[in-house]
Length: 198
Image (cartoon, rainbow, N blue to C red; front, side, top):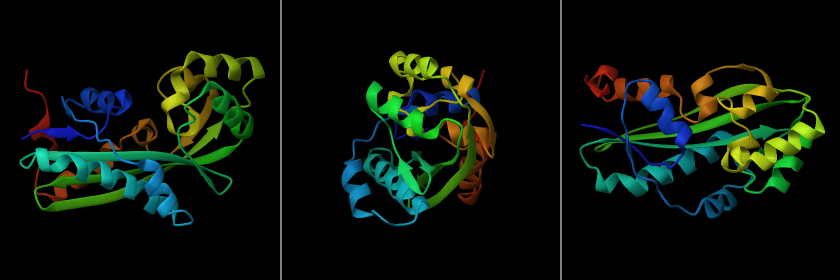
């Protein structure tokens, strides 16, 4: 029995590896934009959980005996959900909008095990620093934030520009270990069952 990560996110894989689990990496390819458009105006938690569920469900048939984990994160800033910026220009624009402000990073999780399902969103408050224009430009050009929800990372270069968070740090990085633990317990499984044996 293994944990299968329906994501190509290096950050999500790193969280699991740091927690003693070597996941199977099986990226799900789903039309995120269509899901977001269909759910426009819905509760932000419902949107990120729907995205996470679509990813987990896309991969689960290939791993019927394993635990499949889908995740998706978006930043709620001023009542508007922000996904990945994808380009340096969009990153700079995002950072000019969020620098010095507070937002919520919402991470949706869908964990599947056979016919069992656990879906939960985690919310963490992020306090962004008033980063300088030069640092914003340099950060955007580094490429690091282009494929990150909210245009930042907590665990790498972006950590310079986050004053503090309130909530679960692993959730901000992309996968909440407390949520995953609750999912495993709900399935009658133990976390230690998945630790890499020396």
